[in-house]
Image (cartoon, rainbow, N blue to C red; front, side):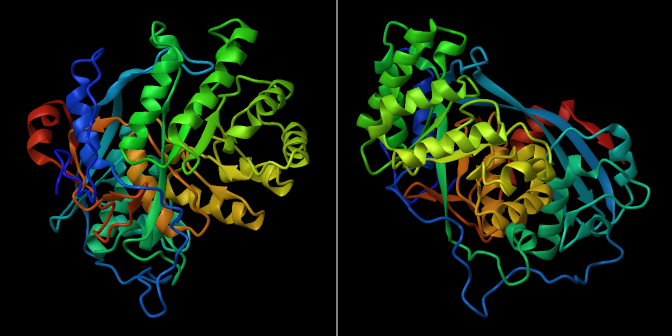
Length: 443
């Protein structure tokens, strides 16, 4: 069946009404239609059988008379089904998000879209250019003669090129013969367990338990809980005790079959992080993210501590780093097990570089994604194009302009679509009514 979001669902989960937030019932119903199923322990590492590879080679025959004739840009808005509270360093995150949507149109009737914040000069310079002038299959999207700053529109270029070639973006990202097969599951986790106990003090930890249970009902089999309450919002000892209580409560609610991830947003130092894990070692944490500011010796000591106790918890970090090269000292020393370059900041091109560097040092990729629905389905495309992908991070925000008929969710994972480009469409009626009057146009 199809949800109100246009996403094909495999299994349906019943939604629960939240009496504190009257509008939440409708959102949960929509998310319930989007997400359902049981744990999938597969990633997009599965490759297509011999003879079925769909990725392009290093030379592409493309239409030489293709031209970008129009570009539009506009802010779009999305809403979450619940209020997102604090993390260790930032105040309440709220329920509304914005993304900047860029659309590229060509003289043959194709168009592609993506997010980014390009400069006006970049957009004006792209008009009249062939989009394939910016595409090098072995590398990705790059600047070409007379242009710069193309990185800020690279998502739209990938989408456009995929539509012209009638190929999914992940088949363009992949090295020749290495793209994952359509339908391959890509694991996803719910990243929305913030400090709801502080947001709703009358409920406290019980509120976190409710949200964790809701995530399971929506089909997630991997859930990330924020910690670090004592860094800013509570007395340090009280915050530490609350973090311990929350992690034990979440594990109790989600059961032993689901994966539990934690994220401190650098709200601990190494000694505090070690103390925390000693206090909750029995809850079985799959990965620990940003436990303290990244530092090679500190990370290595923390990993040594975990191994001495027999824990297999992975160390995840790097959402604040800006390039693949920034990760090199952490990867060459194996200080990071999971690299988390931001999906929208890195784009597919830089993430392909990061994936190769990470693979050389036995690390996997789980892009940071927050405040974005686009970042989630971009992560699905990346997963199909690189061999060492771990998770898509899901922010439950919903943008009404996105239509995702080709993207299915089953057993805690998205299934790789076989639709061309990003595999997502735009609702033209919504766009024309809500955003077209506000857009900037370059022709």
